[in-house]
Length: 91
Image (cartoon, rainbow, N blue to C red; front, side):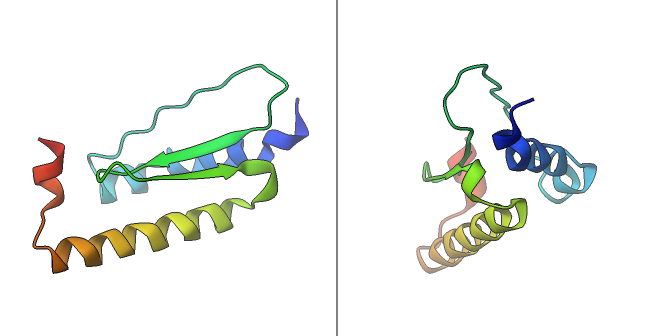
């Protein structure tokens, strides 16, 4: 096994937990496991079409999740200020 993929595999394991789906029923997880010499990358895509991309060999799982949570909180704040609704973006 490629030791560089440790954080990516652990992150995938964690976000596939039932508690994530329960907290956000519209959460969609699409693993794209490739067998190339390229560095492992983790990409989060949000409803506002923004992305967070991580070279997972450079991050611990907790660090990636904290950045994702921070990004989501900022989106939530911006949606409130602009009086947007996430559900409207999913239609």
